[in-house]
Image (cartoon, rainbow, N blue to C red):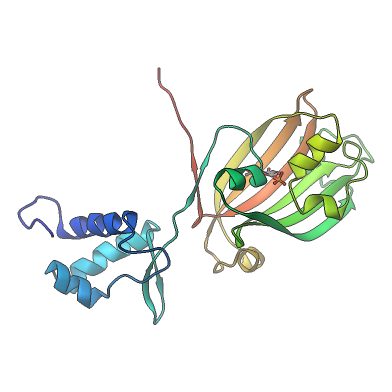
Length: 241
Ligand code: 16G
């Protein structure tokens, strides 16, 4: 129950109480929470106070509203550490989730100028352009556009990229994947991305671009991906001393 004498505002105490109920699965993921009327009776506060708490939790991604249906508990975001250079397949495996991909396109093209530069390619070199939707437990998490020099990985075919590209490269060539630089930027989904990711247009997405190197310093991929911001958060550990 709320502490009416506390200096903490009522709406804040309600938020904390609802968060605690989500954590302890009293309110389960994808299920509705009680209505505003029920909550205001339960906490003995006005509906406006309840609405403020619920709106804050919606804005923070703990809850979501569906028109005419009510307010639901959001699924917990996947926490992705920004250490260690892992593949999507490895990340999902570590979490005990099932990973899969849908191949949207697999072509060989002359690289666009920025890709050519990032992959340090000479004239007339071609790249694979691989466009995939990545799923975790059958839910779309990201769309990825991967560019890999054909000369580095000759003979790669569509069937080789349904699973892990990193596994394919390391198993079929004498390569060790070493490190990458990665940029993360906030954007909103356009119509196409929204459809592929099963989110509403203009929903928040995280645009990530990775350029990866082999052990000998050769750049072997540039990946442009769009991750669902409602399902992903990136965590980094930082040290001061
Ligand atoms: C991750 C990487 C992506 C890489 C892919 C390989 C990020 C943001 N992206 O999705 O750059 O190409 O893994 O995954 O982490 P795979 O080996 O399962 O195909």
